[in-house]
Amino acid sequence: VGSIIVATGYELFEPLEMRKEYGYGKYPNVITAMQYERLLSSFGPTAGKIYRPSDHKKPSSIAWIQCVGSRSKQLGFPYCSRVCCMYATKEASITKETNPDTDITIFYMDLRAYGKDFQEYYEKAKRSGVNFIRGRPSSVFENKDHSITIRYLDTHTREVGEKTVDLLVLSTAIMPSKVNKRLAEILSIEVDEYGFFRSRSVMSDPILSTREGIYLAGCNQGPKDIPDSVAMGSGAAANAVFPIKDREK
Image 1: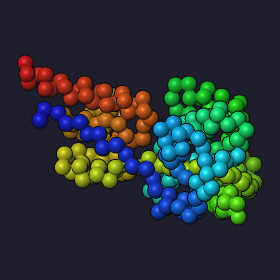
Image 2: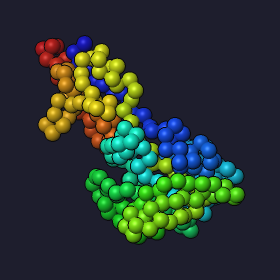
Image 3: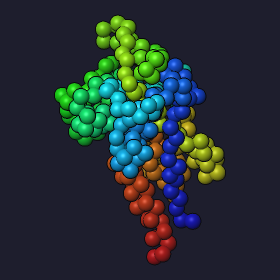
């Protein structure tokens, strides 16, 4: 072949196996952000209406916990997953627009509004009533009514607090695909210490792998949002055509 495009995608951190302190898989009203995204979708299981899994009632309060798996040396994922802050803000904003009375809180380590106009979007969410708490949730437990109580350290005030919500959403880490290392051996290209593919130069040639003629697209090089993934895919396709066209000439 004249060119190869590697587009192995990504995998999501599984909080059932790690970060068990957040109750995922144990308490029905603890779900992942991907599951919440499906609830928001008009094509999802609830036709866009938000219900608690335990009793199918509309939640009056919802909280998000950020960096579940990300930025953790202990778990082996010290990098930022990059998209979590903004998709949680998006999910919270959409919920607030359709259900203005819902009490919404996002617990974050550091707010990273990466991208064009994202900071303004974050500010707009705050003005709409989304509460952002810079804190480290340490554990959660379920109450008799199946609500969830979150224990956390407020990293601004250094005070320990608790918040009870009807539904808890976990923003989980983006991880490299498990096939990356094996595929890297087959193609004789390199992966970094986390399992993402290395590019020849992050600054000047991010689409080219460490071997000529093999191009990278999407999140296999690291966490990316949709526009960046589309741009990388388009760039990889365009670059892959050049050597083929040259041969035809």
